[in-house]
Length: 443
Image 1 (cartoon, rainbow, N blue to C red):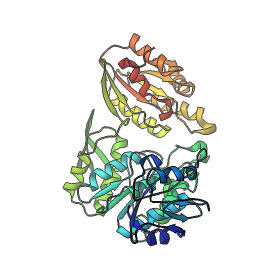
Image 2: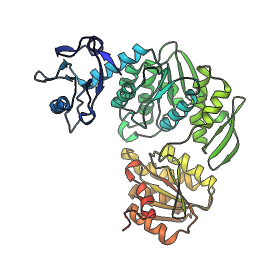
Image 3: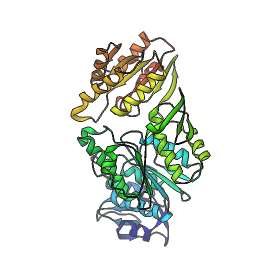
Image 4: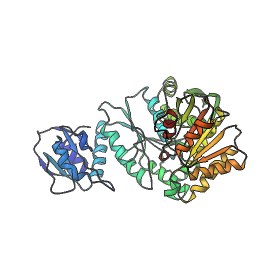
């Protein structure tokens, strides 16, 4: 992202305090003093435990050509005073995106949004020079990172939007100005913070306030989303009910949707459902059927999302990037269908609030109703609640308090050659189990 001083001032409505740089110089932007280079304007962000304005001198010493600041005593070759540095950064990014006239696709949802974003990128890259949110950097700073790193020849940008409470998606959506808005679902993730499923849907539907009137809203056919959507323009609701799966095996799914056949190099009806948003977006943007099919077939999951590893004779499938009750039910039931007589390791799910015990037990009841021959290991006190429901239906369940205990049990009791599935919230650090099986940090 490169802008002149007059453009920066116009974008952030800042006050020019000082500028000794060359006239009409174009500046780049950085929030990290460790990566500062000549030509960068340092944007000092603030958090609960840090204040980037304390490091303006460091940024200048490392080569910064200027800075934004809320204070009166900053000293740099270029100083622009603003009321709030993050708000200024977001406004600058919005200005730059609008300057380049980049088509914008915004995406949110309780689960599946990062996977859907990656599928969208794979499909839309068949026709457009496409840029996307990195990994799951989907908050306000992530929005800025996405735009700041966007090449000048970008034709289309995909912005993933996450949230922890009401108002957060609205803030990003307001600055993103989406041509197409996508909501993958409104489920129980973050219910501990928002209190009800309706509040979750309301938060997700903040995206719909800022879809351009001539744009399109694409979403799962879910009553809660319909209830709170504020978009009045062209809308498409999709559903796995419109899908017919003709073939499914580990690492592959073939399915039909609205009279066309598609292939994915992943398994699971939830992944098929995620792909429908990419199909509908491709149709809206007039990709050919061949382009959409090719894009979907070229999609591969990112790290810790159904990641397959062979470790000391065991086959691990690591899906522990994140977990909530909906994604837990979907991914574990798919695994049990595809890999009979396997081992499932379940960990705690976070951010479920006062309902956390009930929601963990609900997952156990759901899985207990599925026909399978899997055995279960649980790690954590909440996952143990899931295990209790499975035990009541006669399933083999062993519960542990740590990843180390679970790894030791595998090495001592599980036959080499067994397929093992890992599912938990990221905070459980289930990669430790794999590392211990490898022999790293073994105790």
